[in-house]
Image (tube, helix red, strand yellow):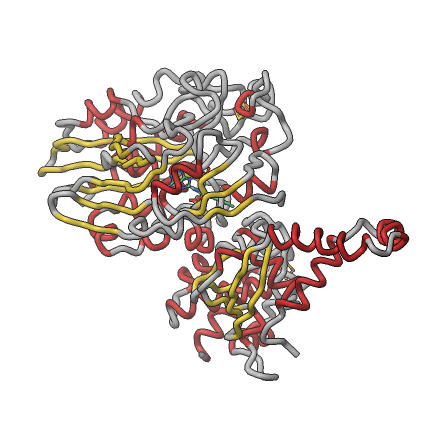
Length: 203
Length: 326
Ligand SMILES: Cc1cc2nc3c(=O)[nH]c(=O)nc-3n(C[C@H](O)[C@H](O)[C@H](O)COP(=O)(O)OP(=O)(O)OC[C@H]3O[C@@H](n4cnc5c(N)ncnc54)[C@H](O)[C@@H]3O)c2cc1C
Ligand code: SF4
Ligand code: FES
Ligand code: FES
């Protein structure tokens, strides 16, 4: 189940991750029992000072988070919100695997800071599902075999969704252009294009 | 990515003051499509990013018959190419924008950031402490230099990566630069610098200076313009070379015109001699042939990139034929 607000559990998890550098550190601290709470408080304060509050709206839900400025939107979506449908491949704004919608427009979530999504609405691949029902684009990718290994597929589908939102009846050239920011290592391009055209027909 | 502070100024003065005087301490941050790549590769390691996106007044596109276009530096590339006036009157800019990066990057990157983006030289982007990064050698001279410059280089041989800048040069564009001290307006042709003038930077901006607007003068009814970009793949790709031209035509004569070239020099490149020759040129394929042969006369290609010369000349000829066809 997705939680409405994950801020408190999150800071604890992040804190534990960053705290001490493994077991040895915590054992050493445990010996000085009275030092532990103080140490914890100091570390937590330092950690929190590096964070900025962020209201992130993803797939219609608002999450109240607190994130370090150097974290990307993809990292926060995947690690903090556990929405792992969004893939990160190049982490460099070059392949499109991490494509999500930001206020309805396709962007690379690996190449944008999470803080830059404040006040905007994010849609990930998980947001396309209607309960257990596949989205027309997902159905079209299944029907037309637009998937080989599948790793680029969530990004392809989000790019296609952005395209169809703007242009519900695209010509083949529009699809080629609209999908040009998404690479596929398997080279499934012809079937990806067919899938998008199929979805445009059935939508 | 390394940690940095994220500063959210509310106006230009605050932004300029927080940007301070040292590039290592703070960098201006717009769409981040270039900057995050540089930070991830540790080419830049600023202590703070100054986010420009929350500053009001930098997001709009305005047009008047007298002033032409005034474009806020924070306008996204996709927003600009979709603008009605750009599509109607400034084809060269529309085409260059549509050839820039990928659909996603155009939804993220801003026009100001595009003009201020850092070079794509793979040594610069990689783990090489070259001249531009304060080292004492240019690795491109004896290295892989197929995509480096053929003119205007030395001691560094980058090409300027921006497509829109090449288009904007032919339109006589200018930029407004603001800082805590005030604002100034500079012609785009004087905005970019060659390595011989500043080996570390690609433009005249000093720390704390911010591009706030781009100005494009009005064009007359008889103006035609276009952009041809040569790239190696169908997906996103920087220009191997590119050519832009804006021409004012009357009957069979080019009244005046400007051409500019991308992928050939450390800055978007223009040749005064070529622009002079376009003036009054009558529309004939033979004239375009001899004019194109004059382009990049002073070029000194590196050992892998002499192919750029015939490519640029042929593209200019093709563009002139296309633009004068109707
Ligand atoms: C995979 C890929 C492919 C690309 N292909 C192309 C291409 O084919 N053609 C092309 O032209 N470009 C291309 N680009 C570059 C892209 O267009 C630019 O990265 C983008 O336009 C930069 O805008 P931004 O708002 O993201 O800038 P940022 O990344 O935020 O900033 C870029 C630089 O400009 C400075 N800066 C930003 N705004 C201002 C301002 N207002 N005043 C002063 N300084 C400022 C920043 O400090 C930084 O140094 C590509 C980029 C990528 C990642
Ligand atoms: S061309 Fe310039 S940026 Fe590239 S290696 Fe040489 S000095 Fe460095
Ligand atoms: S993972 Fe984001 S573009 Fe490749
Ligand atoms: S299906 Fe394997 S990368 Fe596209």
